[in-house]
Image (cartoon, rainbow, N blue to C red; front, side, top):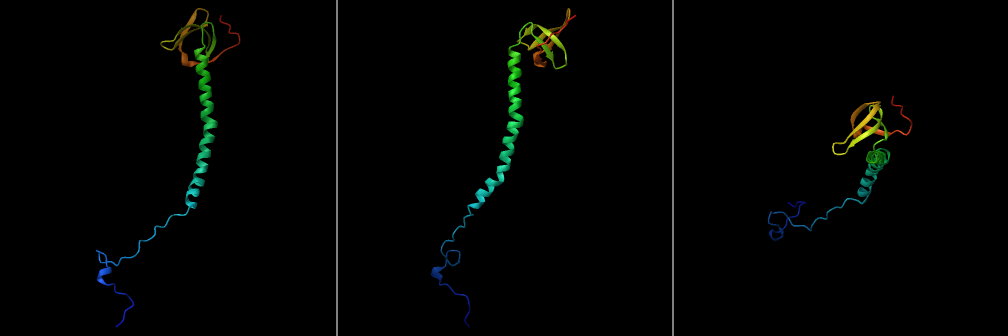
Length: 127
């Protein structure tokens, strides 16, 4: 009774009892997959660049300006604190980062140097 399957001689069987065949070819993914991944990541890269120029860079620029202003601070400079207090610098303690300001005649307060938000160019009437 003939069968449709072919019987291999024992000499052609591998050690596991399976007929040896030529090595199978590894199928490589198409090159379109790499470009597809790059195309999908493009919006993320654009978003990161957008946030850098819109938020991070201006904040760094402003911080640099504030640090420069605080370094140039000297006695007699008219300032505005973050609490809205106008005054004139009378003493600077660089070691502790404190500034003594006169807010009225014979009324002096000590504030943190970092609480100074701007140098005031106008007139301050201390009476």
